Length: 494
Ligand SMILES: [Zn+2]
Image (tube, rainbow, N blue to C red; front, side, top):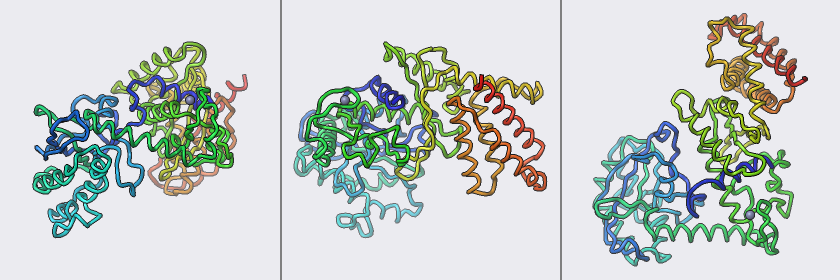
């Protein structure tokens, strides 16, 4: 429960209005201030009769322009509100939450192909389901008209204008890997984003509510009787299951998230829609603020702080602020978040660590360590420092390498280097590293013999192989790890 509570609290104390928990950024965003693969917005400035009315009477398109994704101030919460974006419910849906059309592949170099992507060959886009224009009209805009958010004829007027501005659009559609075509409203020479337009906001709300209701109807047999929400205790008939928040595939780890137990007909972890909002928001913050993907390449680690005891909300905010400040420094970054966590002195503070892997749409959990106090992190760091001092020379042991994040990355690198060139072996060794690191965090003795035997097996091979690995350094690194683990084990035994 520790982990779930922590995510819940994280969501609860987020800022933002009623919709905030449902919103996502349309493209991934990294701390560097740039989306991963670049990203451009092609903005379609609609002319409307009155931006505050419903339906919006769209007269035409004033202009089309190009800006960077999240241009200007990089305030994620503000941008989420502006974009008003949420991923479509599926590729077969005939509507989207927001009038933002995503093109995530690089534009073709060939001008004719580029044009054909939009309007098909011989301008046959009206019946060519693969073209961008067909999708924009039929799978996005038309539903605004059908459900009374656009006046009759608005979509045809928009499409006619887009056709006449196609050359301009094609000019803007270049280079970047990802493009967003965003429909907004031109007002006083300014561009209003979907989240600044009342009709679009109401449309989003209507769609979101029907999604929640749909979830309820599907599980009618379960939700027909009023039950209590597992988080807040409120009695309600509308429940959401946790798999809407976490798509964990690892059902053998049922015990920690009971709501994921498929065999449990009653879904022992029903949450009400209010708590669902908090969970969704917490999950979104986890991915954005507390996700480390660099300590063990291929494995994502969520590290979530939780305050136990009274007045938890206030002090959690302080911890989160302090942590954010730490990782936003240029020299540290999220890849060193373990260092930051080891510095906290708060006695009521605990951390939860989830090691998982993205496998298509599923989230595969490798390990979960709950309730780790900062003192435990400092203890691990202390053992590492002693080992460095014992084995390395003074010049080699610079202060930076004495930190916890370096220790964990060093364990990963040294052990997986042994399996180089062999994918299956590397994966096996990586799993071993996950086990070692989760034992360290959990304060359990690490099986040092298994680590030794892996080294012993591979040393002869290393010595005979001429390759990128210098056997002298490799062997010394192994000694360092064995020394570190042994020190840790004797600390645990105390
Ligand atoms: Zn609740």
